[in-house]
Image 1 (spheres, rainbow, N blue to C red):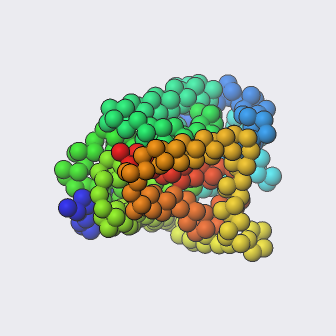
Image 2 (cartoon, rainbow, N blue to C red; image 1 turned 90 degrees about the vertical axis):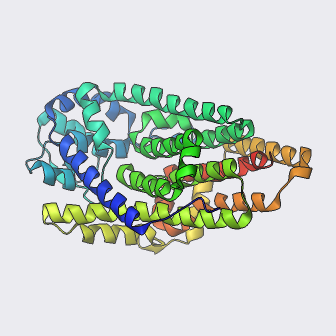
Length: 410
């Protein structure tokens, strides 16, 4: 039985409503007073600047690097007091900047002087995280936000673990733990940049674990993946977006269990729905932003997409396979080898112990899903090559797929 009914009309309505809600939410938070936000940010700005752009939480492990450079951009966006009308400010997302692109220092100077050396804009993204970040900065400083982020991220993780337990998916739980470890999860609470996709993907997993029967009864998986793509586009800064597609997809198949043909058809349909939501929501920002600001946001956005999807870096042609290899390189260390070794040892042992249950087409499907991050890296070669030190987290989907082989034999 087809678990996915698709109505193009409903997809269009969902997209238009999402664009309207996203625009309204951003306009509302841009009506909030920024002085209290600036005061709270000033409390911890010196310590934040002292950390540097990309400090390692685990010495020698690039995967443990924080992205304070981008966090500074996000914080600058949140506390900047624009002279533009709120609706235009919400679409252009202006911030204090400087010629050297030292975002932390630019934020520090702006907070101390109240003036920006240079005003930069970042209109091609939605910056949906501001819907959460701005209200938080009204109430607490950056250190307290990090602490709260740690508590919430741990809580979401534990809810997922409990969901596996409730469904009797103990081997799936082990696979999930391997995937979580591959994220270098210690960095999530410290970097807002890494948190958006983490929460989107984890909440999608929780929806599958706790509400599978609801979506199955309504045959609404198409809309589930469509909305997941929309949320990813709204919140993310192009970090590791396929995490929000691959993780719930694998979970769905582990619960449902179906034939190879149905698995392939569902994977293709859900992938198309996720991509339509992701791209459609992004395009919605460019359209609404251009209309409200009377500026051509499309030109900058499409130029950036073309650059990020190209195989060139600094004017030189970068072989796409190198973008893939640089992401795998993050795990070429003791922790990476230990993680890979334990994962493969566990999977091989399970295959040997329960060889009579081995289903080759299930393994083949999982290995196919494990290739999704590789396809993404090759498609977004420029971005994946330059920013491999955080885009590597997409490989958690590959780890989860391989780790779920024993669960699919149950």
